[in-house]
Amino acid sequence: MQILRTIMWIVVTAILVAFVAMNWESVPIRFWPLDNGDYLLFEWPVGFIAIVFFVLGFIPMWLYHRGVKWRQQRRIASLENALRSATPTPVQTPMSEPGDLLPETEAPAKDTPAA
Picture (cartoon, rainbow, N blue to C red):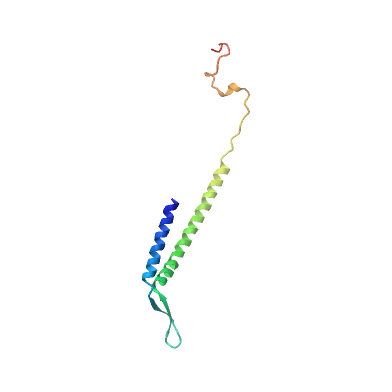
């Protein structure tokens, strides 16, 4: 199963690198306006912009997933501890004779000789 995961990550990385390589044109991005009427401009490659905004959109969902997973693990541990404390431990009684384990009908008769 680990090999499939590794292959998947290699494919995703190759697709991402190909996307960035094909979209390496720099485009001007206008941020907030300045006092003189111009805008603050940055020239970034399109592929880099796409990756940055993908990561910015991915982080909240990843954090939510980690939070749910953490909460579920805590809930499972709590339930396991409650079950462990509610289950009584078996009490072993000492055996008085070795024949006590066999039912009465299967116990060998003492009068008959062994064959």
